[in-house]
Amino acid sequence: STTAPTAPPLSCLLGESESGRVAQLLITPTMAPPRKVFVVGVGMTKFEKPGRREDFDYPDMAKESVTKALEDAKLQYSDIQHAAVGYCYGDSTCGQRALYEVGLTGIPVYNVNNNCSTGSTALMMGKQLIEGGIAECVLALGFEKMERGSLKAKWEDRAQPVEPLVMEMMEVSGIEPAPMMPQIFGNAGLE
Image (cartoon, rainbow, N blue to C red; front, side, top):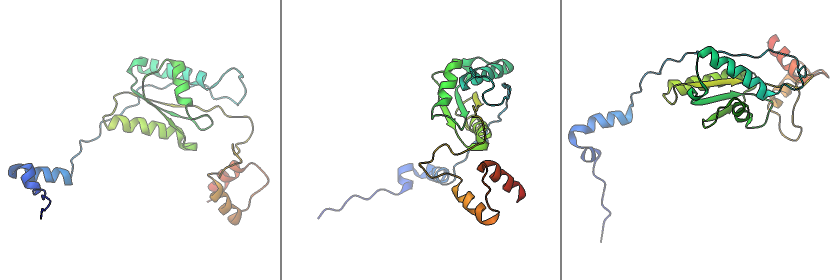
């Protein structure tokens, strides 16, 4: 009869003098404190009503604001190592398209969609990349090309993210035959 060999105890694998320290590191890893993060440049476009400038699209918005931010920070495009780009109404890679217009290629671009928190989420992602030591310089960009009129659902063939909220709202305060998003914001303000 043969028996399978048993693994030696951890202390034998690591050596008697090292086992306590290594086991402690495996159980309670120590982490360096997060690095400090600073916003060193800001650039903005003018806020306008949708459709005011027909030839002004989101790549134009990005180019204008990124160029201003880099000038403000006295940085070059080549200094940017990662980018977090926030928008809601666009295809899945609008962040890449916007930054390629500016000249940024060859870096990771993270597309962020978090509704009204999109811009702050992109900024938080950039902060985390720097704090964690993954990057030294990160661009956080946000843009939105809105349609004319009230906010409304873009797709009718799938579950809407706000559906449970709307159902609850129907029971609590009722719904008017008017655009839904202003009603949601208004009812939230009444709480």
